[in-house]
Amino acid sequence: MLLPLIIFHAATGGYYREKLRKKYRQDVCHIYSFSRMHVTATDFNSGLFDCFKGHKSVRKCCFACWCEPVRFAANSSATGFLDFWFALIIASFFLPLIWLWGFIGRLHIRQEYGMEPHACSDFFAWLFCYPCALTQESKFVDAGFVALSQGRPYLHIEPPPVPPPDPPRKRDPETSPVTPTRVEEPGEVIPSSVIV
Image (cartoon, rainbow, N blue to C red):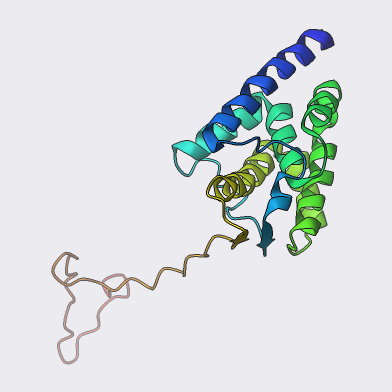
């Protein structure tokens, strides 16, 4: 059962690597392909649970669910963590432990590109929701692939902006219904259930 899975992942990995080579006009899955440019980042360029923000994110998340060794290998080789084929075979062979390989690879990305360390949250992200963690890393790596294809010598990645909280809503007198209030007559007592 393990051998067909490894063969499937190897065939998919070869196809995917060639697809990326054609898309970006170079072998972006070569180990340390990001070393040709200066990459700095304070954090990943998408949130951990941004898996369903747009059709490209959904495709990346689905690919991370069903072909995780292939995407893990592409990310690992581009960032210099592991060679593409070695990462693919290791992740396929030890598929139940991919969360551990992914966690170590995520620590490598953070250290390599000057991101703030978050070992505890990275550990739990890979342990409990590896498709989300792998999709987040894939968006980061894909931004690097685009910069490589454009020949840019540097890439600075910022985390997604945090939207400001919604201001308190004011009642619009034209669209909101007006609740009638009862005016107290002199000497009259209004029961508390009637007061609005």
